[in-house]
Image (cartoon, rainbow, N blue to C red; front, side, top):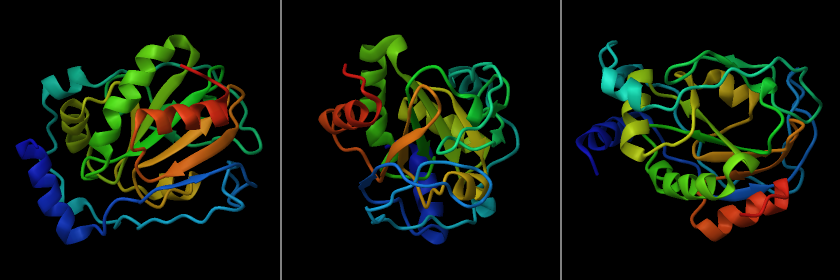
Length: 224
């Protein structure tokens, strides 16, 4: 564990109740908040909400150039209308270099959307699984992230230390992601079809390559 992660965990003990625990979910109805997306109709979320406060643990405003250079760049994606059961009309700034990304625009390729946090102890254990499947699947599968409830500087350092291989957007206070994606804490992974529909989700850590492959095959029809 790096010194950065030790610092995050010490701060997190004081303000956070912990990462979400595992539960996989299928498709569902719209949220009722004006932003449609898939939610679970039958499987309860066995999870622990993350605390909202992060201001006390945010570092200096400056961002080390090495951390910024190491973070994957967000893509420019064409505009698309939000679809029922799909990702919301929510635009967030890129964690690394690149433009802000409207989530509803992420179309055309089946996608694994991971909500992670610099302070989450489970999140770094998932990253090698995502990186391995990303390499094997190639252009058949998109990986994308939302960095949740921590400052951009911490997120950039964590992206480097955790080995995050996919671009992420930044939601420092977590409020927008919590409401629009119905996320109660990281790690949470959404499985989004090529036409933008949220087909399923896993609340909590994905613990093996086999589990990840099964979820991708079940919800997205992609084998790798």
